Length: 372
Image 1: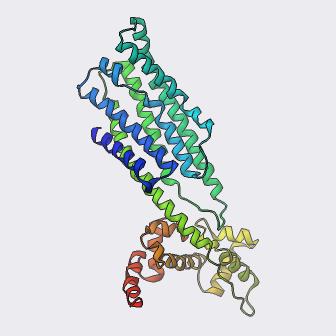
Image 2: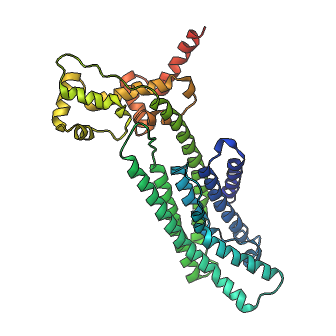
Image 3: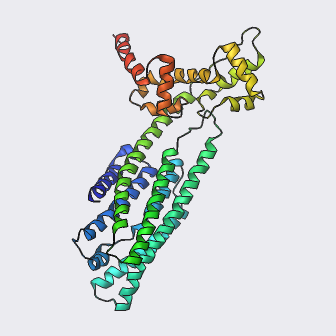
C-alpha cells in the first residue's frame, strides 16, 4: 500500500511538471492516480495502528471515493477526443464529491472546536458508510458511461479513411474491466464491514493491494499509450501527405483487377487494419470468390499476401525515415496497417527474412557509408 501510494504521488508530480506529458488526458490520469495514492496513503496509517479510528475520521479522512472515477471518465473522454474543450457541464460529475467533501470539512472543523453533539457525531459516522456505498454505485455508473464512450468511438473508427487516425482501444477497455472488478471488491468489503464489524478488513486489503497494482499499471499504460498515440499522429501526417501509388493499366488486364488495384492503392486502403477480402468485394460490387480467383491467377498471390506486402513496404519507408528513428515498432506497425506488434513482426519477417528491428539495424551501416 505504502509503495503504491508513493509511486502514485511521484508519478503525478512528474506528469504535472513535465512538458513532455502536457495534455488534458494526462493531467486527468495524474489526478486519478493521485486520488488512488492518497486514498491508500490515508488508510495505511489507520490499518498499521499509527492512528486510531476516531482520529482518522476526525482529521485525516477525505472522500476520494466519489472523485476518482470522475477523473477516470474525463481521462477517457480527453484521451479519445484530445481537441475537445473542458465545458462547464463537466463540473456536474464533481457535485457528489463537493457535497461529501463539504460535509467532511464541516465535521472536522466542528470536532476541532468541540462543537458537535453526540447525535451529530453519530450522524456523520453513518454518513461515511453512505458515502462509501454511494461511491461504489457512482463509480460503476461512471465506468459504464466511460465504456460506452469507448465503444461509440470504436464504432466511428470502423469506417476507415486515409485522413483519420485509427487507434487501438483494447487496453483501455481492459482497464475499465479491472476498475469494475475493484468496485465489486469494494462493494463486498463494505457489506462485510457492515455485517461483521470494522475490525474485519480482509477484503479491504484486497482492494488496497488492487489499487496499488492499478496505480503502477495504469500510470505505465497511460503514458506508454500516450507516447504511441503521439508517434502515430506524426507518422499518419507523413503518410497522409505522401502521394498514393499510381496504378499502371496493362494491356488486356481484367477490368475487375484494375478496379481492385485502384481501390487498394489509389487511396492507400491497404493501411486499413480492418481490410478484408469480404469488405473489398462488397465495396467493388464483386463476388468474393471470383475476386479471390482473379487475384491469385493474375497477381500470383493471395489477397492477404498482396495487402501485407504493401504494408511491409509502407513500414520500410517509416523505418528508413530518420524522423522516426526513435519511434516504437508498435506505432510504426499500427500505422502501416497491422493490428499488433506481433503481427507486424511475423509478417515483416515473412517477406524480408528479418524482423523490423533487424531490418532497421541493418540499414545503419549503409546510412553511415552513404554520408561519408
